[in-house]
Image (cartoon, rainbow, N blue to C red; front, side, top):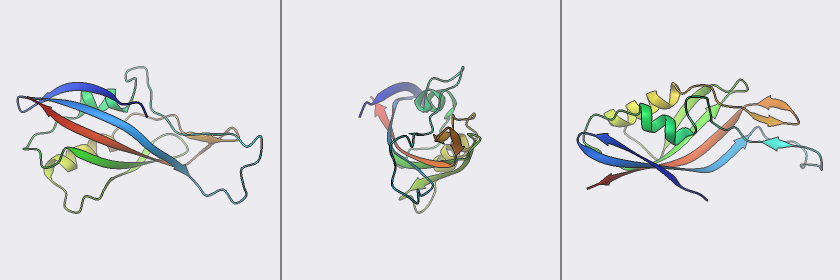
Length: 135
């Protein structure tokens, strides 16, 4: 698993954002995957943003004291590539920064949707987001 990072400033603290993709799931396949059944997971890359980390680094503007620095995130991508749902896994009570993060994720530009046998399909992408203060 390759980790990449991008530095940005929040409240005078330099933070490094690290995103690692944990999994990509799609609709349940009723039969075992046969030879020739080709699946490609959803991925994010646009002319303006090279990756999710690039997008978050340029658009995530957290405002309050940080309550947590690691997030498990699940985004649901529809067959057209739009984020339809963003969830912070294992977060029971959302802080103001959590809400800003969810808003930023829900307003991402269009993804390249997952494909199965050449057809666009709905999928879920789970990843970790690490915000690390750099003193």
